[in-house]
Length: 127
Image (cartoon, rainbow, N blue to C red):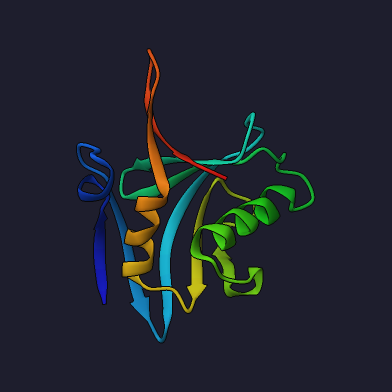
């Protein structure tokens, strides 16, 4: 089952569509990671991909570990349920979430608050 996530209903964002698919109890979607950020947070969507800022540097898998930690918190699942299946050394990654579903990803949107600054709008995770 493939689909797109529409966060606009949840948080008032104009149009955020995250492409995803579900297969054998796994939710599969793509993530674009921006390493060495000031803090780890979900930024929003770009070209159908979830965009995430990660505080860790892309050295020795630290950014990948931080991404897994952040997603496990968002989904309320153990870290072992989150797997980076492709893109281990790339900014564009494919993530599999065992036990996750499209509705879980959509519900995740309600965990964000809309934050507006003078230069940009972003979705910020309240940790």
